[in-house]
Image (tube, rainbow over all chains, first blue to last red; front, top):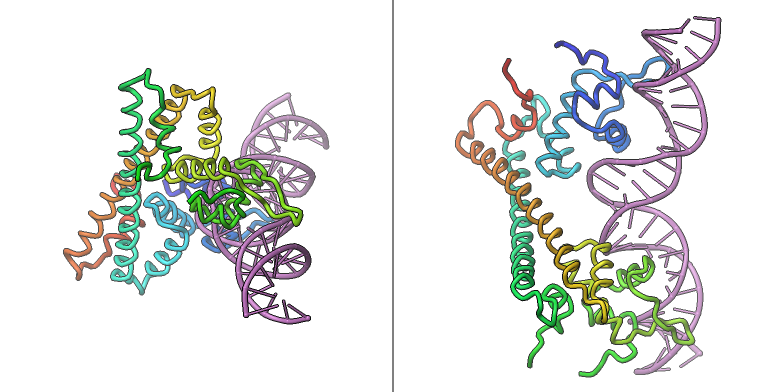
Length: 141
Length: 141
DNA sequence: CTCCCACCCGTAGCGACTACAGGGTCAAGG
DNA sequence: CCTTGACCCTGTAGTCGCTACGGGTGGGAG
């Protein structure tokens, strides 16, 4: 399987698991380098494009922004390999992920509590979910 | 404090906690009804606008999309009060929230495991985070 | 009368794609 | 040789939920 020598954009998309249109988008925004072209203007990709694109896809799967991935690619350059900075970036991202989890768990609690109330008394005059949305703020006082 | 009789857009924004520009945006996309205007063309809001806007804000805080909030507002109409449908919508949303939490937890595990490895051996030849991003997929075979 | 603030409108930008429209290219089959 | 159909090209617009800006008006205070 030593394929991927002179891939078309479609081949690259398939091999990397990245949508074809997205590959062109990454080129447009400078995240992927512009490849050589055939006489007819078709893009021709090499192995290093594939490796870079897979790196980007993995980064996205891990929730990094394209700007963060840009920075990671920079830090991953051969000769550079700035592991300390990479770790810093990853740790910052991890903090964001944890913050989002905390936010969503608060949401989950509120929603599930409210929906459960709804279950309990189907014949109640008011709808607990709507109450939550309409409540006059602090209500009393 | 029986203010909010004939609010300006700025007053409404402050009272509701929604950004002023966002209020105009909600009107533009039809989420908020177009209010009356003064002779000079300034918007004049009534209490029902404020109640609706706070409903929207609460919905957003709970993570509902504007389309879902549109649906909830519809289901909350006096005379309708379709609690069953409201519950269904909320339950669907709760499922999405839980799915997102599950996704993020997977991320969190991967990231924190990898970063921890980085801690352990600061003098290791390779960077665990970069390894994660660059790994040749299944590696062997 | 002038100052300034709050309001008006329309448009463009964000992030990360995705989806066209309207063409050109290329290899295989009839 | 010609057609078919899969692929490729470019450029632009749409998505979601705002946010920001530029340039203009209105109205009250000093």
